[in-house]
Length: 352
Image 1 (cartoon, helix red, strand yellow):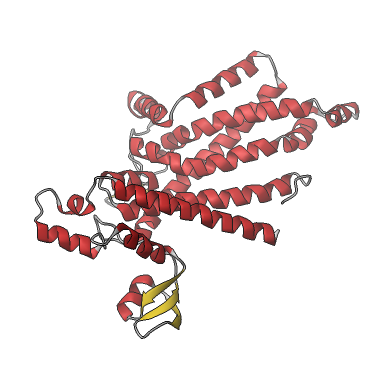
Image 2 (cartoon, one colour):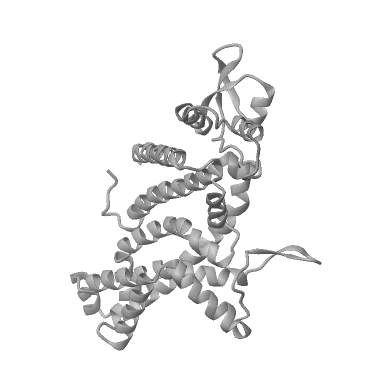
């Protein structure tokens, strides 16, 4: 298990390095000047040059890339000064000269071009909101999806089965941004007097008497919108897997022993049908973090997606890269956990 995890971690680091390379050079070939976006169209040459020098944009692209990799690397080369140590929060390992040291640190995501705030701090303000949205959407999709899939399989070829299949097909076909607009208009505007929901709003709102308060109702519509597609896929996967398992010999043996239908379905059949569902759940949870970009923007939900879209509009590279790296990290971690869960659910699966 330890060797397997080490191999997976190395693979994950290689994936994240590839993400950095692609995004960095893609951003640098675009005809966009971050200094101009920061200072405005009427900025003078001296101001633009000062901004480019402050953020290292005046250096060749290859040098910028080397500096950025050094900032991201947990072990890097840094100046042996108090200001440098305060910025990176590094722990000195050993000196390589009077001016430079090899140091251990957390990956440094730099500062936003637009606000000059630390990107890590900015992300930590919005990531919990997105994690709550993705987690609740996934729980919603799992509970409803597995239930409908089981009911559909048990009642094969009945109107219940056909209705569940039709619903899942519709859910897969509808893009998140389109479904979000329809759901926001229907439940947040047209029927808002009955639902009590808003078209837009974040998880936290400001109350003049209580200060910042959590507004759970603003989570409902984004949660449903974000969970709609994984719910539809889970319905179909659960249905197909259950139909396959219910035809196995051990299920017929369990019936012959006189076990109740509930015991056969939920204790024996469902557990063995969960492998493809677990794969979908794991992959979709990571995808929900990326898919939240559109949903958060539609509903005005203050999360990682909305912050990234705003950064894209302003060509704020450090925020864009920080967001993408966080999503890539989530994908890597969830893929590793998925393989471990496989062994726990089905001992026949071996790690290799």
